[in-house]
Amino acid sequence: MTPALKTANLTRTFEIGKRLFGPARARVHAVNPMSFEVRPGETLGIVGESGCGKSTLARMLVGLLPPTSGRIEIEGRALDRADPVAFGRLIQYVFQDPVSSLNPRKTIRQIMEAPLRNLHGLKGAALDDRVAEFFDAVNLRPEFLSRYPHEFSGGQAQRIGIARALAASPRILILDEPVSALDVSVQAQVLNLLADLKIRLNLTYLFISHDLAVVEAVSDRIAVLYFGSLVETGPAEKVFASPRHPYTKLLADSAPVVGRPLGGAQSGELPDPLNPPPGCAFAGRCLRASDLCRSAVPDLRAVEGDQFAACHHPLGP
Ligand SMILES: Nc1ncnc2c1ncn2[C@@H]1O[C@H](COP(=O)(O)OP(=O)(O)OP(=O)(O)O)[C@@H](O)[C@H]1O
Image (cartoon, rainbow, N blue to C red; front, side, top):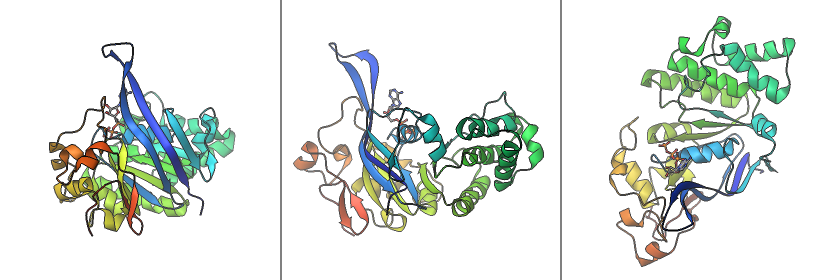
């Protein structure tokens, strides 16, 4: 089956201004060569601590940030960076902070119309119909269209963000911490809405979050990101219940309560992103680390069925 979304060695480094002892500039390795697939209709959850590269990955996938190297394919077609319209028609982004992602000086109607004009050339009655259709799909009243973003609660603003993304008729939504900024009582409503829309519109989701409980609840498969690399992937019901990578186990053990973010896992020392270690980036925090771990980067390998871990000494079931 052709994947809905596929990355091949997708990589991003950032050069930063500071010069270290010579002409070479310092380089942050934000996303190391990353290859994964998302199947049609699937929700792939991507989980990781702050600074592990989640936003950099998301921004590359929607064309907001050029990759340093590697490819992005949607339904078997490589995306061309030079063609932002093609990107926008296939893949859309829902931002973490719903209110600040909406331009405060524009009405909701203007905000909704912009991608439809730019990506699909819609105007007149066809444009009005599409705006109304997607506004209704996220359960918002039509009179809201003439209002401004500050007039809405976080949950309503996130519905508007979702309507704006969906009106572009994408195949894939990148949901970057879509409920983290919302009250717990509103989170479930937005998650249920996303689940309904996915089925109704035949969508594929990439759901990025630092909240294990949310990711486990919404995902079919989960990918765990650590220090710019995927360290474990597998079925949602397996990854935290039976982790194979010691880092995944640390995450699962440190966030046992529903809705609790990854607090305890941050107590260990993260490597310096300007000077990554030669072997496994987790070796310095790992009780199982051997000389091999400190010298050779482990590849993501199948440990059982559909569960993969990038570990020289994976945990048993
Ligand atoms: N524009 C930039 N210039 C330099 N370094 C950057 C830039 N953007 C991100 N980084 C670095 O890349 C790494 C990954 O950052 P990224 O924002 O993608 O992580 P994240 O997992 O989304 O974190 P958070 O959850 O805190 O947003 C970090 O070390 C970060 O400091």
